[in-house]
Image (tube, rainbow, N blue to C red):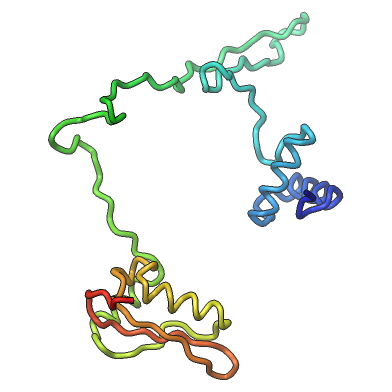
Length: 191
């Protein structure tokens, strides 16, 4: 199976990444470049090469070679600071593989807040005006509009959950599509 990018293109990406950094590449190009570099034995631009100790799963501290203060000859080795990375100790677990920490939350445990994504304010406004139809997005291609309306209606966008709480449809205007939605309540619509 042939890859998406040619070898010449990947060489050009490699040179570009070395010059300008990997931030200028798309995620797909970065992934392809990483695979190409590993295949060809090259260092991925922006990464520091390390030798991993495969037995422990950690990166052992490497001595840094420094130029001697005196000019008599051999370089001296400078020891790095004590390594703070250690392999985790194996924990005891029950038959289900769970580690029990007690009957109450340990100190420092943080409760996760619900993610308030892009659509949270739209869903709140629709909820405040139950039964009213509003245009929630416009200027879309047909497939994008259909997908958005479906995701709103089925609750796959978490802001519009649970399924059936919102109705959504799309409409064509001036050659582009818009998505309309309204809040109808928390009961599923039976679809």
